[in-house]
Length: 180
Length: 427
Image (tube, rainbow over all chains, first blue to last red; front, side, top):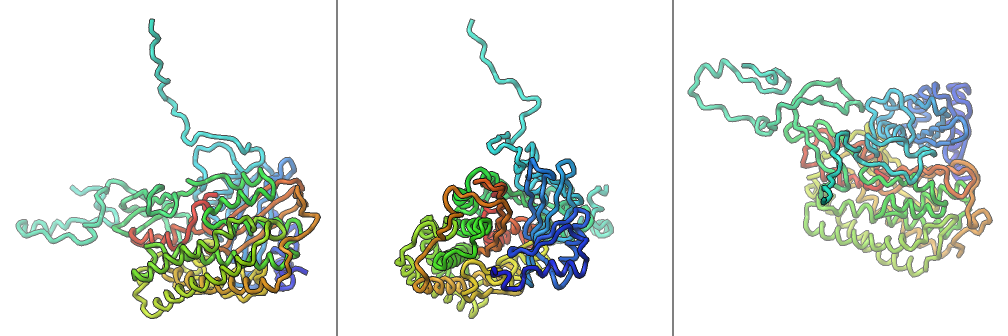
């Protein structure tokens, strides 16, 4: 028995969701010592998250992290993970959604958690997963002209790109006339 | 002729009646607002261009001075660009631009083995790397399923070094000139013990002992514990003196009152943790709610303040130094009764380390808040994915909400008091 089990935390959120929302809201729910883990369809994400945030017995008030795992070449390619925590009650939850490469869109959480703003900007620039409904999507750590999504597995680790794009009408380098 | 700008909100309209009544009368002195109003009035900006965030209002036209501050300035804690709009001296909007120190740490972690990851992840926080290394160790241990079996001695050492690092990090923040109490004597004393505390933890952290999976990578001599147990109380004594002085004379840190104020709801919504959240009255501490290592055997207290301003954050830090130092001393004290094993002798941890496929998450409470690490393995000797999210990232993203409404000259004390680490934000 791990400490988290001993504290009686693990499994609480799974039971809560099953009792109040029904089992159909997520495709699977697992009680893990490091936080209850829910796999959800993208379309049910906001319903589940809104419940977990507002229900006083869950009170997941902190969005700890939003990130993705590139499972290439496995399909579906992306696994997006939201990590949430209750500052008051100490529960932790991981929400997982699986996305295909050609449909890499998630609903934006900015309306629920203001902290999602920078996290989703980073998710988009690093993985190309588009947060639908994000109010002002632009790069967070990278820059506007960078091509590609660096944390995808098919982006070569040693790849280099110019920080400033070459000028369109740059003058050709000066060549001294050869002495005749 | 009435200029187009005059009809905009905030513009000072000339009063035609007053002007025609007595042309010879002396001009009324301009009010303060006029003197502060910048000359660049041709530029029109939308208030809340960033406006997307909490409490966003529909845009309104106004004239403000737009000022880009940074990314390189000696007053800034790290390369950070702040594009601010000023109304007089007040910040109307703040748009932080980060990433100037981006080193691709998460990609780099995917390229090396789990053990070599210690060297890479330490670069997320060069000044205080030990918290990152221990969080990495915990995540990999969970991946291998050995986290619960790490020997007691290693667990106690881990708690001790984490708490020492917390003391040193808090003191490094508090001893900065813009934040220190308004007393030259106390300021000198704080700066001195900040150096001492850093000296205590730096040798330990850089010994390489904490870059081990399943325990300590190399043994630490008991003399180390004795040396720290002898030197740390002197540091704590000075901090206690500063705390008493602040309790007796509230004027000593009155210059921080109300700066960078943030409400509890905003702090939670913006994912703030650590002193920034506890200063708004939320007693949230991972050492209590999710005790790892030897924390569940040691009495941990969370310092809480109400008010959510820079002064409250400073006081929370001051109190946490005392609590943290106490925990470190208790952990060191228990070392003598702990069994001598320092690392797990398990076949699963032999070199080369090949973890079972899976995902493991670990979180630790560092000085500025929660550090969260996710490690994904697909059964090879290198991580499939490594995610590092340090506390400064959320703080940097929350800068607009923290700074808007403050005066431009209060930006530096607020930034310094948040304890931002640039490499942690940019990774």
